[in-house]
Length: 149
Image (cartoon, rainbow, N blue to C red; front, side, top):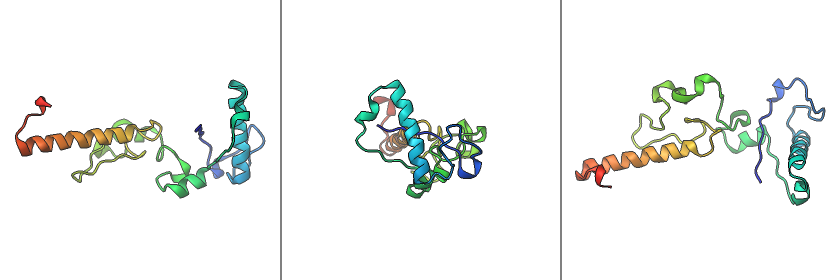
């Protein structure tokens, strides 16, 4: 099972309602927070905890170390504020499309529209654009109509 949650950055944590996390997101904080997540799942799915044979917990520091695109561990590739939504993501000039100014280069990361919270959609958009452009290029090169495909 894969589960994740969003946590405040260390400098932003003021208080922990559960009283067990200091906000350093070190090994101990991560384990205590994961315990709380597991307890919540257990309330909705009794017996869940007894089925867990291993657990791997990654915090903001570990996530960013594994993928520089996850700045501060942000799974959505940065902010989710309005200026990074719809046609503004990643920059207004791209109008939310996966195409770039370089032929054959498409954005497929969490930084592309619609963002990292929509699992796989960025890659799907880029793949569809690449396939479309390949068909258009093939049509121009061969003179065959796209409508016959």
